[in-house]
Image (cartoon, rainbow, N blue to C red; front, side, top):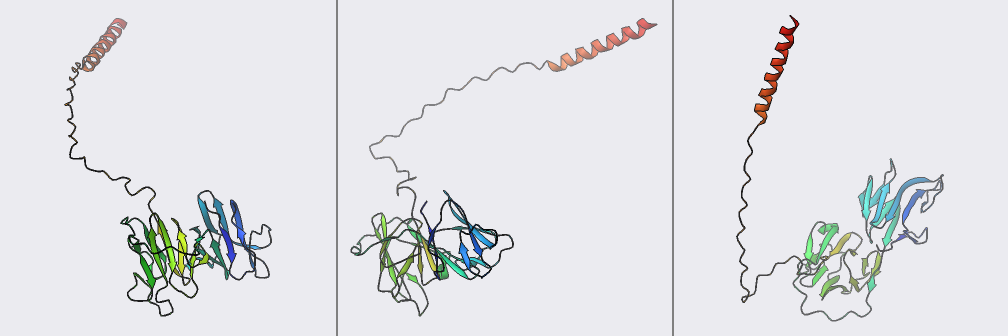
Length: 270
């Protein structure tokens, strides 16, 4: 699991790594929200629970005003790098790794035909939609963009997603502030499976790639020279002879024997 850091947007507390275990989000009497305070006095708002499986946000009983990426959370939420957690007015950004590129390579001529490499929208206007990366995808407000953000404040051509063999490159096309990849501001970077890319604060996408090679699970037809394998007919198994059912006769014999014993006892007593 990648190591994540909690970054306070207002910088009221230095960045802090999420270590395995539980780290509390509390509010002091002064109204300041802090992380990792184990004292009894401050009010518990929520807590980060971290283990080998990932990071969860657990809201305290009766807690209100806890949001992840602008959506309210009442009990628990699974987190990933790049998520924004709002607690009582304080914003905490989960930062992860980002492989930035100073000089991106030339655009590829062939992006590949694996339709399983795609971007999945998890926030903003394209929430729930998926975009395959079999061809380069431009995101912007230009109507000709592959991923259209119909917002005048959004750059006409913000960035482009490119396939370079087994790798995916996020290439900046001259945006004003760049993009957020796993909570880190960047312009050009290599993306990995599970990376979250955020544009203008609320347009969120996650890169999804297959776990195995493209040929996994595909059954190829036999070559022309291959002969079909003849299956040998199975030898019929002789049926076992059915044994006669003797239990009715045994029951009848027991009844007769019982009646005879009862008669002897009855007449012998006289």
